[in-house]
Image (cartoon, rainbow, N blue to C red; front, side):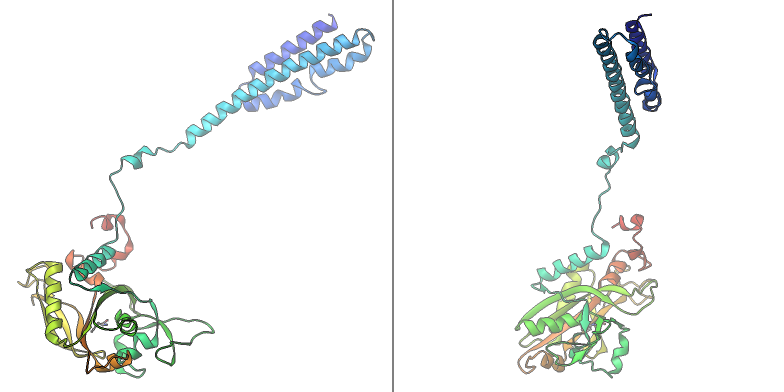
Length: 356
Ligand code: PHE
């Protein structure tokens, strides 16, 4: 067999091997037989020394051409297998996004946020502005300025969480003059102080926000909850205005069947002070389990702003009078929707949340 026939035969064999490879791995496995010293064409190259000097260029060319054919066949096969492998991988990793496109489920605001926004709307409709304050407060704003000095027994009404600021456990608070501890506000009343300090009366504002108390979570308590505070400061404001405003709000928020009443109570920052009740929203006053058959449910606290509080904010209590009120937003949402356990609001079970 001539050297040319040998070359042609080796080329054909190599091409057939390539064509018979089943996949990329198979192709890789036969690569030593196609290229390099151990391949058949490689072996023939070594025979070049035995070829006549005159024939060598021709034989060399034939070898090169054969090698080129094998290289091309190999490259083509490799490309084909890589493509197939990529496609297979894409197919297995494919995500079916049509499901979420077709879904009718949409996210929405949390019940507490919805309630807060509704309350703001109602008060804005009555001419109030909305104010906010920080959640980490100084002792001055949360207690002292609200007529609750350090040793005041009423401080026990608020189970306070203090912040450990390491080295900086004390900071100056500016207005109050004294260095004070930093705590998580136990109510929204400190925002009253901030508003009175920064805004000249008349003031008609509500302050919704998150508050904190050292409470263990149970069906009606959470260590983190929400309140809304109302503050009015103007000339000639009386208890009648407070009572009328709460009644007006109750009707606007719950509807005409619900009214409010005041019961004498005590808060250090208001004088006189009262708790305010509303007609039970479940039985509309007839008496049921929720209202313990009284027809009323307690909503929050209120009263006429104490002269000491006005003085702490630089307001002359001879000229200005006002009232304040505050109540829990979470509890309100709870009652309105007949939810039995406050904790359900914060477990974030979608089946619960999507009902509202
Ligand atoms: N801050 C009081 C509380 O958290 C509620 C309140 C607000 C009472 C305003 C009177 C006036 O219990």
